[in-house]
Length: 130
View 1 (cartoon, rainbow, N blue to C red):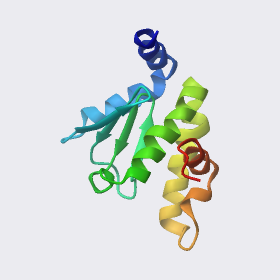
View 2 (cartoon, one colour):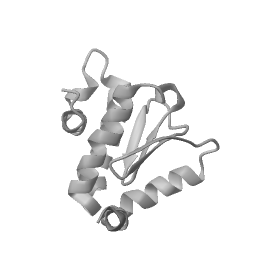
View 3 (cartoon, rainbow, N blue to C red):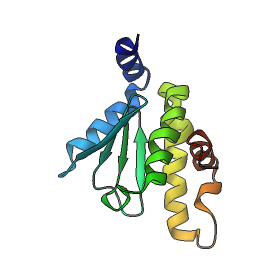
View 4 (cartoon, helix red, strand yellow):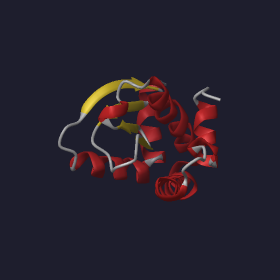
């Protein structure tokens, strides 16, 4: 059954998997960190201010966060659960709001908790971080 689950999940999460593959195509250095829950955890350069990004079967963390178990769990055990739940709607329900929140937070969020936003709170809860 688990052999069939990977391709089924890959297709269910196809939009975000394609975005992840596009990001990885343009990344100069990519290193495999882990594989868990049908999710490949990778280290790659990300835009400034982003510790990690989860897209379908891929969780990508920046080199500075590659040894931070909380960041890896937040991405690989947190956001990927939402990706499996929402499937093709993930980018609209989680991805886009999360990206916009990151931009807002980097400009105006001083003194506020980044993880209070619903997308981050859900990921922390799925990963057992809160």
